[in-house]
Amino acid sequence: MQSQCDPAFGKLSAEDVPALIYWLRSSQRSDLSGGAWFDTPTKDAALDIMASGWRAGPDRERVDLSLPVAWDALCTEDRSWGSQLHSWKFMDKPLQEFVGTQDLQFLEWCIERAVSWSERYTEQSTDNDIVWYNMALGQRALRLASLIHLGAHNGISRDNLAVLLRAANRHGREFLSDKSFNPRTNHGYFVAIGQTVLGTALEFLPAMRQVAELGRERLTLMASTQFLPDGGHSEHSPEYHRMLMRSFGLALDNGLIVEPEITGRLRKAADLLGWMIQPNGSLVPFGDTPYVDMTDGSHLPTASPGTNFLMSEGRTGQPLADHLAVFPESGYAFVRSPQPQTNQGHLGSSYLAFLAAFHGRAHKHADDLHFTWFDRGLEILVDGGRYGYGPLLPLDSPLRAQGFYYADRFRQYVESTMAHNTASADGRDHDRRRDPTGSGVGSCDESDGVFTLRGSAHHAGWSHHRTIRFEPGRGIRVTDDVQSTDAVKRDFRLWFNLNGQLDLIHHGEGKAAWSCPGSGWELELREYTQAALVPPVRGAESPLRGWRSVTDGSREAAWSVGLEVERTRHHVFQTTLSIRTL
Image (cartoon, rainbow, N blue to C red):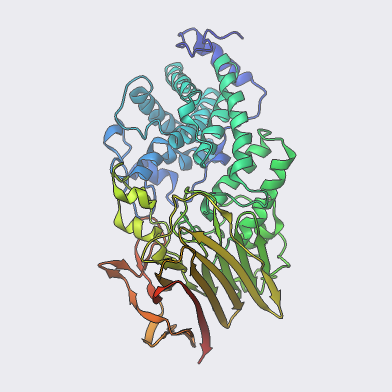
């Protein structure tokens, strides 16, 4: 069939639509746009979303999507929320429900809102830059391709299909613009996969073939840059590692990526994902990672038997044999000991996760040489979390020079060095504007059940070398060697953040102790080099200190305690965190 739509994305004529419907229905190409692309952790049922509104998360208010939808007035106060709305994330559960039941009410609901959105934005201008922002563009294209395919096979009206095809043309024009594609962050992946799927699904249009070809080139580039040779995602965030690995895996399954080197990296990424799962089933919350339950049954099986074993809580896959894993290019090291061998006792493992890397600014918190610790069924040393994004800072804000993008002060806090278990100099956060240094993980080993992890980080004018000696179930000894490299005397502080469920017993003279209610054990922190104790606080407001965010938008009090030395060029902190059974 020769379409009257030329490579310049000319307008569809009324005569085109019946022929396009015929082509879609008769095409032998497998559907690249089905519900497997969509990742929907929300617990809201499809009928609840349709009747009562959509929520971007458990702490978000519902958004009324009754027709006519006031698109310009919705989700304007939060950039992340707006991106999810304009990427059509609200359609995922209804689309999946339609695929599973073939009940047309779910598909029709989605098509009606897609048509409403397209009539507003395809040919009309908008001041809202998030509408055609690259992340929303790429993710929306996947859903648009799905609606066109499903609608053509299930009696969509010609008028509605014409509206969606005009929207596809507009998406194609946006994809071919260089400004839509940023290969330096994961946003480039969503553009590449969105345009590849949409272009391939509509390849009978010459211009869309061009979109698909460019998409495949971009997709291969993104796979080779987003995942490092050892399988780690380059943006310091287990959640983005999980999300990108899942989507790249689907691209492999659909024949959109065929290069053996990329296939190998993605297999390694699947192995690494398992090490990112804490004994309580959640992802370790490094970088921009909220609480993600990896054992709730919503995650697709991976290419890694060990990861599948942990995600299924021992029902499928194979248990891991090693207790220590090091990923030298990515800058991760993990300990899980003992490894669970059955579907019982996963909470009984001790677990330590160590991050020693700076590959770039994307999703990177000020957390060089940060680590978390899970033991005795509890997260003991915790991370500040993600909190969400929110409004951007003004372009002229001095905070941007410190590496912050977002205006919310609590978001700035969870990104800060103070909210992580690491060292700072002169009260400043780690500089995330410096040139990337790559992995800083050093040699890591195990002897007689004791694990030793090493790493280093180099900052402007000072360096930090850390050695962690971990005895599962008993405690940790941390050696932190901080040194000025420019002969300037500095004030060095060491920060530890502990679970807010612990009860403070006492503190003073380089030590502090907490009890764990109902557990039969206590935790003692002790420093051996005469460093002064920064007294522990929990949930302090002014200034913010002693907090973490588990889910986006939530605040949970945690214990923050520090150790400091003043006006020195070199110091070696020696700190223990010991579990004492009562």
